[in-house]
Amino acid sequence: MAYQPRAPDHSSATDENSRNRRLYNPYQDLNLPTQTLYNLPTSPEFLFQEESLAQRRSWGENLTYYTGIGYLAGATAGAAKGFATGMKSIEPTDTLKLKINRILNGSGHTGRQIGNRCGVIGLMYAGLESGMVAVRDTDDVINSVVAGLGTGALYKAAAGPRSAAVAGAIGGVLVGLAVTGKQVLKRYVPI
Image (cartoon, rainbow, N blue to C red):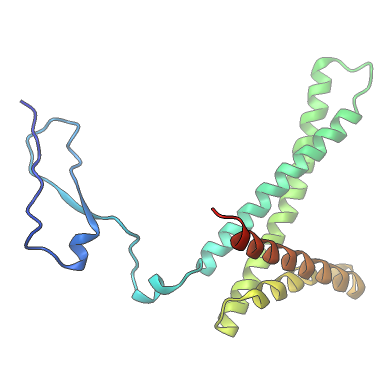
């Protein structure tokens, strides 16, 4: 006869910690006669109470998120662009192996280049946005737009002040459009 664990009596434990927990038996599928049950939480746990009140990612999570998303999006777009240039560079006398090689080389080379560029842009944006949140002690649209301005200007700073100003303006406008689009989606699209 297999071991059937019984649920413990929760009538005496009515505090907040007991209500948000579930029982876990790691040996339930092994059919072992053991009484070991672990009381696991059902909601996220935080080391400090202040962390549970924050409604945004930490600076490290932001850094990882924006860098990863930037690299992934850039590598995907770069691979598609490299695929197109690889297809255009195929000559009529190429064998099948040479055609495949041209396509793979073009996709890999361009994907790496654009992926790295977008990853660096995401890294700079996350750092500037987290810095703005820390300095201003508030999380609003201004932080995002200023971080976009700074990221564009910083990314193109080596090309001269005019290029930096144009890139900063483009970065600010793009982030402003993205934030506005997010607010419109939240308001008008029921999810």
